Image 1 (cartoon, rainbow, N blue to C red):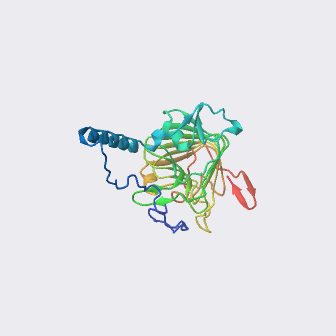
Image 2: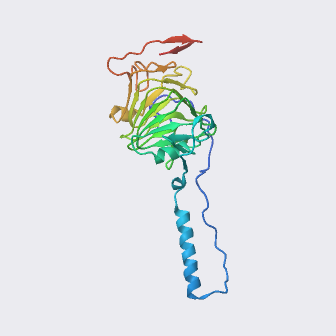
Image 3: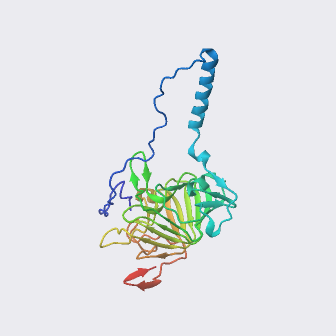
Length: 289
């Protein structure tokens, strides 16, 4: 099934009620300098002013990520106020920890977080949710030519993300997905945890998703007739040309049978060879596979 915010070659999905947003990333760096007078004058003064201006410009050009603080004195536990850690190095934000991580590292979530932008992963990493929760109270979804924010976590470029630690990714209702994969070289493996999105819990525009475990559901439904048919979903054209794929080897899905769904057409089967979708339980008129 196509991403509803790109093309709609199938029946219309429910419309996200998100509203219009101004970019929070636009900010003013420099004001118009006022003229100054000085009694020192001369070439020496001009050199001094040039030096000061150079230093100011260099300071202004330092990227925000370079100023991200890491704390090796935090002992963790209930007194820890940091968002994430890599070993004994603790970081104020999860994105800061991910940016600082070397390929192959494990980033551990230290507390519940409420992001206002997608957490982006473009390297090989393990994200240990450590029982914590990532959820947004302000809208994340943006789908313009310049910005495409679809999920709480995006795997892009050469990203190869493994999610573990039995935590929760819960999107704000009528907003975004829990996870999306963006590029043909992007990969994500979900070992466990709870993933709650809108229309889709996990969406693969390009790349390869492997589900070994976890619980998956959606708040915003696709339609009255097919409320949960697209909990896992690929972009149709990329699924057909095999640049987008989903392989399911485990997990629990609310109202969604990964062996027999409509995600990529009638009778779509995302299950790996030798795996089948079975009814796990029925609770409050909801079927779990």
